[in-house]
Image 1 (cartoon, rainbow over the protein chains, first blue to last red):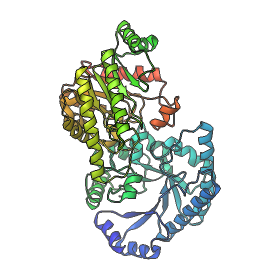
Image 2 (cartoon, rainbow over the protein chains, first blue to last red; image 1 turned 180 degrees about the vertical axis):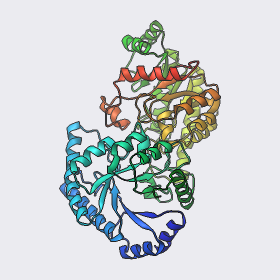
Image 3 (spheres, helix red, strand yellow; image 1 turned 90 degrees about the horizontal axis):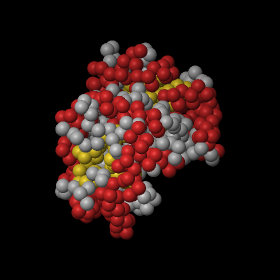
Image 4 (cartoon, rainbow over the protein chains, first blue to last red; image 1 turned 60 degrees about the horizontal axis):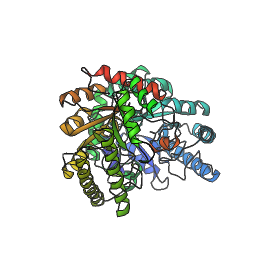
Length: 269
Length: 269
């Protein structure tokens, strides 16, 4: 774990995002110390599977989702991470043909759960960053407009928005307009190329993104979120059927350099 | 049916693409006559569901797929359509975590089926346009490079490639490079915006597309392929959970005008 953290620093990062699949699988205090030694901060990201679904009809699954989110908030607080982020409203990959009122009822369940999660987050001084996913990964919240509607209903100082370039590339008409619409509710940005490879190697309109981030005076973290086809569960979860353009370390190093070079002065990377 | 065909002309099109869900559901000769009266040509597109899967392990499903493709080729020929197009190698929406050799075995089944389909297509002087889909809709052929590999193995003068802007936006690093790579094997282009809305209203890099089409001297049809969230089966099949930017006729009219204005001299629309 100390090696992983030190490597993030060496590759050009100020922050390391920890995706929490199993909250019991790692030693939080040891991770915090490793960050302190390496001069690396943290953010925390959720792994929202079918049994952690805040908009599910089954109250047990909703309770399990809330318990998971609360646990992750505590991990974030213990790591000094400002944000716990992810598609907190639903399980990833759940898409169904629903009547509009059915989808609305699911969003209402998510809002209720997020209100309770927000109280816990406020106690720990952590903010929740709610992330739209593209249409193939959720039918509930695909756009900046939709996530703002959800977050406005939660109405908490400790709940904001995360936008991800991969999802925006599919579901937003304009990258810049999406960023400006979210404005000061934008907590964090996930970056990767249109094909989920190294930022800067494809046709994602990076210029529009950076211009809009400057327009809103964004000071939050830009995190590279990519995946490895080498781990089967991850490859399946994100539909990664062929190698990315680079091995993980190379992708991270080149991506960080690209993001830093595009931002003057750098925001973070 | 005559009304639909005349409407396509009125909206600014030279060609109407017929998606064949059920080959027995319409009167081909009546459609041909309607096209002749309206001065509209045709292309034909496949609806490739789970029982029409040329790379399936089950020989009955493969035989059913081949029979369907052959039937559609005959419909295309009867309509005077130059192409029968679609993701002819697999059912739409089939994504699985496979070992590389398993995926290769599936592609080999598709190549065998396409060779037989190509013989039938050659007899009827119709060409098959094989279309990559994005990673969420198939795990077999996501890119121009992958479809060329497949088509090269089929090795028929009557088999080429269709590229679709929606899928390219997700899976190609460079739109222009993808078009130039396919070159004179490109039979047809499906166009829609990055969010499947009206061409020209989002951030798809249209300039790159048009420049590359000029580079390769493309003379084939540009077809607007969009969908309506008003039909449940279609909405579910293409993950359309919210209204598009315009009603179908308005989308078609504005999209055709955009494509024509961008091409001087116009290729087709």
